Image 1 (spheres, rainbow, N blue to C red):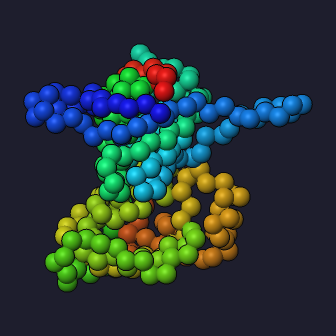
Image 2: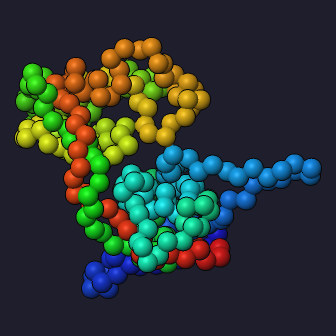
Length: 272
């Protein structure tokens, strides 16, 4: 484990001006994943999961994945919105899997927002990560109002947007959504799609509605789906069908300019 207080590259100037360092883990360990091989057995390469997820248990944080997936998780972006620059295209960034174990400072349990900021600092310090943002034309899905009109009503609440679980079990999601904007809805379901999801409904304000669907994010294997209780015979539950039948909204394939995060430079992590 190594102690550090690095300044996030993109926030270095601001931090210098305010005198406040960027959020950082108290201690962190970064190790390349090495499969255990018993005598007489062949090594089997670990398959990187479809997405790398931050696991928070008290003040302890763990995550594993290749560099590109770690960047996606740290900046809360789908992996297809993280790209290597043409000037920096290193195969290790996608082939080598790293395991990160860290501890947040203090005794309070950090929020995911705080953990992502700490991860950004870690990537800048340990991987010498340098990034930029640019727009790129790519396939997307537009969220639009269906031919029969939206089946949602303006919210009667003035409280901040919130979702309430209505008996979700495994991959079967049942939610009651209160005062959600269309941007909130996009954020809620965007991980169910293999392309960026953009709000093109033209609907403004907050809405109250219920949403019932089977969650099956891109990259989920058949075995993983079965383990989560996903059934191929449950009608009307895929997210596209649920949005259409329950909310009167449709998913339209399109091509749009989308902001992506570009890895301009990185190095294999420094030693613990």
